[in-house]
Image (cartoon, rainbow, N blue to C red; front, side, top):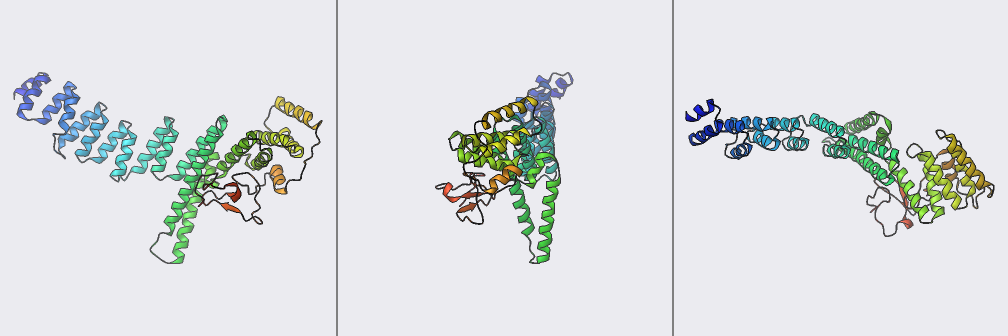
Amino acid sequence: KIGDFYAERFNWRKAVMYYQQAKQPEKMAECYYRLEDFNSLQKMVSMVPPGTPLLTTMAQMFESVGIHETATDCYLKAGDVRAGIDCCVLLNQWDRAVSLAEQHDYPQIEGLLSKYAKYLLDKGEKLQAVELYRKANKATDAAKLLAMIAEEVTKTQADPLRAKKLNVLAALEVERFRKTALDMSQVTGSTDIAQTTAKTLDTLMTMDQATADGGGKAAKVLDNAWRGAAAYHYYLLAQRQLYNGKMDAAMKTSIRLAEYEDVIDPKDIYSLVALTAFHNKYFGICSRAFIKLETMGGISDEDRETIQNLALSIFTKNSPLDPHQLPEQYLNCLDTGTPYYACTASGRLIQVDSERSFIMCRTCRHYVLEREIQNVNNCPLCHSSLL
């Protein structure tokens, strides 16, 4: 009663002293809250038995002032997991919310993950959103987002190596999705072939639907997962060969890029072909590359004139002829973008029908010549094991 006397007169400091003596934890909590003595209020949490209604009251007190960790702990000790998750969401502690939802098999975790992903994307934390999607086994969403980030990197033309890494990660996520989907279709207790076939077809339809959803280049990664990764791989390979003085290899690798005009700027592709062919003294190939540059749309009149003047200065001194005829696969790719099998280590043409000394990577399904990867056990493109 003495504690009540002081509490009625808002003398909370004296009131809490008498409530301590009277062992009135509910009223003590109210006094600490009024005094904003949250340290003392936090110390009380360990003394309150689990499942006590006071824990919910204390959790609401902590939540009202943004002390999310203690508030969540109080809700969990009170046995109210949903309130703890809601508290984390309300206070933007999404990491803890997702962790709790996973630990306690929260039934609405899908909606929670979607909200968290939107929160991260609004903050511009795209790679954290990718990690969230991976934890949630949403491989298609992770792949699309990685492809979107790679597309942004491509536009700045700042770091093609980063663009390749992002495309490889996106492709690996697509492969993970496909493997999981097909594995699920094959896990059945029945030996009925018709049922197994129906489940496989249903899985393939699901994969097609995932591919159709969304739009833009980011969605294309689901349809042809390794295309972007291969484009940047050959682009970087040609650059390395050029700077290492391997002009013939650089020219042949850069010709392979003609298929990837939708991934890499065509101006960059044919400029690289022209440069490597010029240094390799393949002026016929160089001439074809200059024709592509001159007839390309979307370039300014000033750039077009510069290209024409450069071509004139080269071909007035050198006939547009090659010292040796290249295989038709190279010429078809350069002229029409027709793809061919190229070694991921050297960029050279692989005649799959006639050559036997090559390996196909089981992950990215690209080929590499055995003689080009002596003492190397990993795929040059996706870095998966070749053993």
